[in-house]
Length: 111
Length: 115
Image (cartoon, rainbow over all chains, first blue to last red; front, side, top):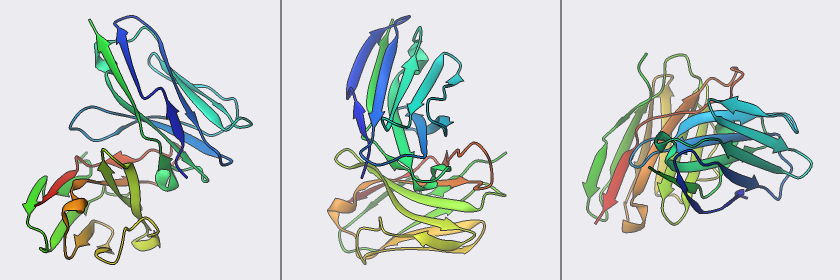
């Protein structure tokens, strides 16, 4: 069963912050985040393996609440290059292969 | 280093024709995945190989779809016969399942249009 992402779309101005949420009805061992620009392949951002652990990638960080079966992606001081569709993948194993991906959140950053 | 290489990048065919998509994973990666992406269904895992062996094909839509991995450097996804609803972007991805990042490396995709 695929995870549910929210919001479906968000529009920001450069420098603003955004949060993208990912929740699952099943117990999770791992959460992975990817960004896909239009017409391109998804690109890995980060993986979270332990409950409550936060990881970061430039000004993008994420948290994973294993108890709530939720993960959130935080984009701080957004840049134009952050525009794209963000997918979370959730899986029963530590590596991404068995992940089921959410429908994606489209982020548009405007000047 | 070369990334995951897929071919063809674009394929337009008529309903009923056979379609073969090809993938070369990153050297040293021993897990390979085929995904399908559509607006309606998002990114779906079709099949997953580990060390050239199909591990999970539960995502393969129906018998018209088949996938093979004859060696560590090549995989094919075949659709026979193709139907308009098969139109999608098909991604191949590879990973090192003994790595510690869990990262999937995606190819640039094969955009299939079935008329």
